[in-house]
Image 1 (cartoon, helix red, strand yellow):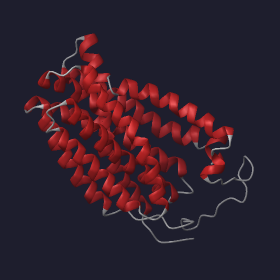
Image 2 (cartoon, helix red, strand yellow):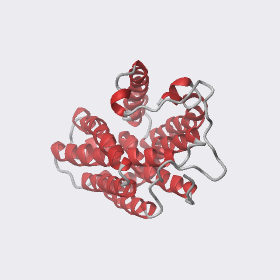
Image 3 (cartoon, rainbow, N blue to C red):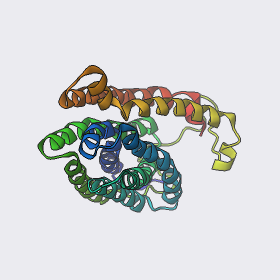
Image 4 (tube, rainbow, N blue to C red):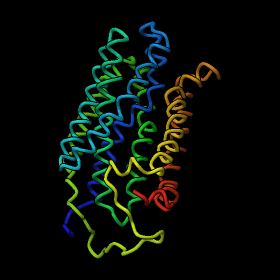
Length: 288
């Protein structure tokens, strides 16, 4: 179905949302100062990031279901606001348990809603450029730390870590609400003007499965293992990068933030290039 809709504006707005929620990957910049301010151990503080990463997939699944029912804008806006609220409330914590609730649960659930809805809705608008759209969306999520880390470090140095959480939380809520105004639900069977789907792909006819049938295929579990291994190692480094730089190599907070940005810049560039050229071009990428 051909429908007039500014899909590029929706892509930009969705990427802006994920540039906010992706700040979760800059947690290592906050962890050290929070430990010094509150006297909590790094093990106690890093558990908040673990909880965040654990609860996010729950709302990714739920957010995808709600997006299928046409609620993309509300899921994105609600998830982004919940994430920003979790960030803001983290600036008011007085115990590890409260940290786990605000940063771990609230921010984690909000991130999951926003990410799944942005990705699912936007890809439907780009049947002719799926790799490019998914690459930009995913890179926005992963590249958010490039922006968040130096800003957070500056706020921490000029004020304190709790103030940094509060200021960034408010900023994220505002940005998400403004960006959500430009997001529209992807029409069913959307086709860009002048584009027609190929009758048969170069790897044979395209097979569309529902989620129950998908779970019965070995390819699904192969992709889960592949992505799980990559995500596990990436999250392990991202959540501790600044702390590792300061504790193991004696870097200052500013220097650690710089190398943290360099790390995420490399991730950002790889996501832009490899997702387009490798994932969506290989047989596995076209299977589902």
